[in-house]
Length: 500
Image (cartoon, rainbow, N blue to C red; front, side, top):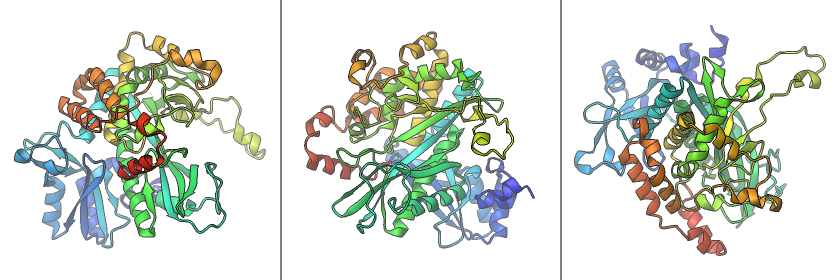
């Protein structure tokens, strides 16, 4: 038995002794038959960003084969606003590589994510999942490389305050128990996410913690490993479903909302990216950031204002994107700098073997650390449509390779200082700003939509729908109107508390 596969938390991987990417229909049927599985669930995200579920009881082998082969009909008009009731039928077809044993089902159940198809059996053009697939395909065709991504999933856990070992307000970063109250809950979430196929890097408590009206608000983060962007979106989607379901079983409330209340840390959804070719990370050359990486960053600098349309999708998003909150407001990038939009994190490019220095009994490992280097987009938050966001980032990074002046743009937008400090005011003035509202974000997307519609990635209907929804909030002056009105701010937060 392959020990690496045997240790995999996904029960299907361990049982079938093959990676999920190689799952076939016959594999799913074999697992179901040999493990007394009684139910199959189809799951798929709708326009509201939540996973929907269709349950099947397994009547017999023929029926199981039929649903796995043919999928099922669903009412598309109830899932997406761009589908008319008069012609609303869609097909949902399971993607076998996403199969996992449902950790919450009372009866033994295998669940799978699905893709949408239209009446002619073609992929649904305006499906977010298909849009991401098209974006990754266009990236490969233009660059000859693969676009990979992973997310930092931040969220607040909310429960009754027992008054014991109170945490220090806004000082929760990597806190241990008993001052951090929900570490065990987070590690249980991580275990379940791993069982569903999520490739997790680590988890920890985050900066934000406070008490309000007798309740503890504690911010946590689960960070993933880089995988092909299509898989990254699937993993984040399932992870949010897992966290909410487990919280419900414990009587906790959970929010991924970008802002909770004034003066407290908001929750982002930072996206790390790397570009791969022949299994090698292309982000470094001789220990420094490569031309490949700088071109991708330049593309993100150019399209950053409109990327907010996918990654910051309700009015509370723009109460997080304010100065001095470790959230970006200007279009710039830098090394290890949390005041910028795109950050190049510390990347293990030092020439020393730190493991040997910390552990004198070890011999030098000569470990290839270049695989670890990523760049991080810091504007998105938990309101994002995960598939549209990663598709938008793939388009932006691809655009960097299509720009004749990409390296000049990268140089012009690079900063190595905290741009919000007084002495850097001139530099700050020279930088473009991110939108300050959904309305402004819609305007940016309207101006730059041709880049996203290029290579047939985003359908015009999808772009129209996003713009229409953003403008419907009528929030052009909202941030300014209620910035000193905490009661109205709390009412707004409650309205979008369970976004994404």
